[in-house]
Length: 430
Image 1: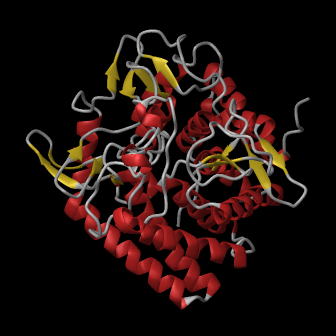
Image 2: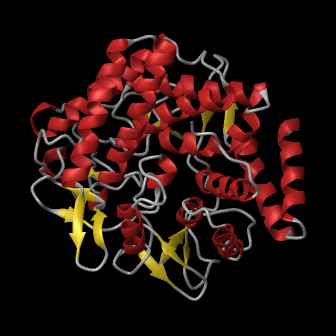
């Protein structure tokens, strides 16, 4: 049985419908995707928190759940019930981070469900414990954007403060992963990207250079080199959010000072170790580095990505190094950029060769102010839904009827944010 849609959502859908005019297919796709997350993936819990499954996997990813609700900030600006829903997710995320800051996906209850019985620190709450920097970034981002879009500050409580200090502790520890980190991850009898080498420590990185280590990418694939540049960029952004929260809301000078110092360290290290002089594109950002001089030039569809730098707030769209990097990753210099008869764009090693992601197409449009360019990419997305009226993970560049994940809420949300952006409805980020 479908849930009754909030009046605020019904009103916004009507406004979008008017702005899109006679584009009936785009209107219907927006309706499908905008209502799908709330209708099928969101659960209000008895404790006042909110639990959000990814779609076809019955677990909550810290990253995905934030992205899934992001298009609802536009509603939250006017609707207190949507505000409560988002606040409930922030509270549940902080609770999970305190349970295990190295885990990426959690169960609704302490029920023991999991993707795999991995050799790492697990409990009945944890669906999967692949350590990814972005799993700690997104909850801080959500808490900050909730404040900026609604004025709400009640979620900045003692649990939030405790979780914030825990995140700082983890990122500090992982600046010296080789010598200080307690984290190990081994999965038996699996593809190599689902486990970490060296008995779970991952590939060797140079310690104490300022960058913070990540075991896995936002795709949940193992990093080739442990310093994942887009995720370090995102860490810088949310650490600066934390400075503002600690100063203006929490009155915690210690938290503000520690967050600021770490943000400065990581940013300096990104600019020192994370940039490469490319023979064709000029100065660009690498996707991953190890601190010893090895680097990986690519981009992945999952967020944060190099493509998403302006979206997450690390640089402006006009930044020269970003533009150089953008040209590189939107070309065949990126091994995961694919061209076909139906579309061209960025995919992921997480999905088959020649599969583009709807998330990356949406991000390509959201990081460009040109309305005609946004419209062009919306047209690409329209004709690659595989006839379902919904978004997918990846689709075949020559045949969009071949795709992965029929029910993928994060992709639906990214498409909705693009449509809202195109129609003039923006998520406030300051």
